[in-house]
Image 1 (cartoon, one colour):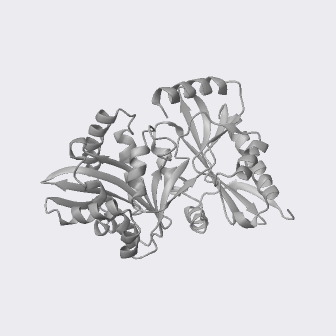
Image 2 (cartoon, helix red, strand yellow):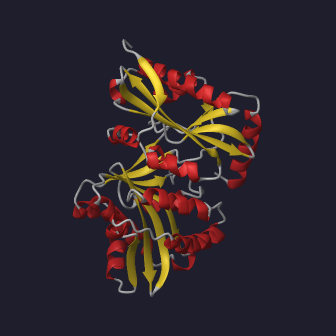
Length: 364
């Protein structure tokens, strides 16, 4: 690599966001606003994050958002769905390793200063033997758990609405049409595009979502995101008109809702809730279709349904049912390299034991 490689913190939002706009492999966890959200949350020690950029002859070629996580099970640096690199197809694998080594040296300095026992990376790289080997050669080992999806179901929404409908599973298309004909079903957004542009924030609607969300938690017995988490996520992304809450009413009662983010020409289906007693009503199909149409209106070319598991390989996994629902809209699976840990201290092994035990208890 005949060039001068330097690493430094990026402090300008425009520089960060403009770089990511030109990258293909990315999620909203890489966004500037996700860093701002992390600052607001209590699990970040003092709101500590680092936005690092690797420059080749003053040209930005890689970014990494590192978050300090302080938990009962241990303290570590987390890189959620990053680092993100531009033009990966044009960079030789050996040069990519050099870039990662440079980044890791800086991360190790931060980790040492912050008393972190390991560095955890949730890569957004395609899960190939070659990509897995890169992390192995750098001294990483597979993490006992993942903190963000390691696979996702995504749909190209650059086609027309009619084409998207035709590419859906027949049952999905039928249920959408049935929901549209049902006069008892009503769908709306919070905030609407107009309200968002006017700077109006319907924060109270987060509580409405949470009430429905808690019903699902009680029914399905999973660990929920806190109300503060939901409020902070909504408020941070709403400032840039990058998020909407979708609601479906049935006979005047809200029975389904979802958080959908719109960032860097991608729509993300992040949180959702459907009242357990109304599963036979096709509200979720109507909601999803309206969210996809909204993403198209906002100029998105891709719709990310978020977490995915292979229902055939893992039929008893908690995500198997939701995945089958997502697959009905068309699209394909994207598998990422499994979450990787770089051990820096013997304290890591206590974290490893705790997380391994939790994973077995949750059946995932």
